[in-house]
Length: 291
Image (cartoon, rainbow, N blue to C red; front, side, top):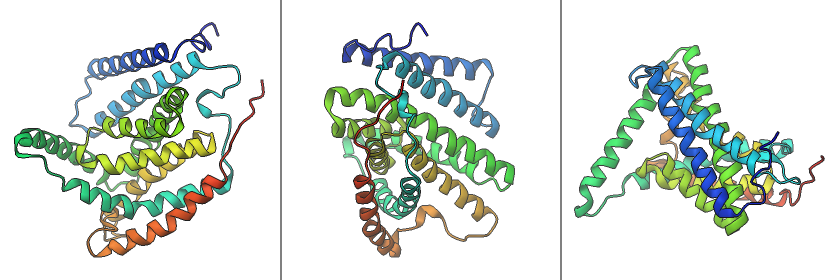
């Protein structure tokens, strides 16, 4: 491939500029495709197809293109050559499930944030935007058929897990850590990841999730681990809503850890810490790429 590794030896500034250009190009292509196919945002199928288009062209395409253009000979493109050990995979699945009550109580605290009176108009805009996003998500999640459940697993769990992790962790974090160091790159990308979702009153929990996903890549040197974690988080919500629609469960997964159940969040913190320590101890320090 003529373009393979073409920008590998260029400066950090050139790489960032090119990545921004590729991301903007992907966004423009996505918007035009949604317009060409007349995908309105009131029909559920159209919403799902729009999400797939934006994920494919706005996230996956620039990530893969940039990774190929920036690749050095001794690097694994997007960290896809190494699959983590099964014990790490199982630990991450348990970790993400245990984090839910913790994330829920932090989300409750974040939702109660208020702006100064002089910024009340901005606060109203943010709350209205988030309310519309929440209503749209609920429309997708509250369908009770098995077909809808399968579609939600694909569009709301699998697709975002793969494309967002390729974009944020696989490419952007890997690019930034060359210049600013690993830990700062993890948290800077986590901030960008949270801002990307454009939900200010859910900013903190997404920031923490983004940080966790970043460290999973850092520890495993494999993009599959954050993808699995991301998928577990989203899929568990999809599954609980489906079970609720069938009357199997009578509570919302988003309420676990709130109110009188605060002790659950505290217990989960106690359980999460040793899992994180275990993943850190099992971290991959170096990888060897076979040509």
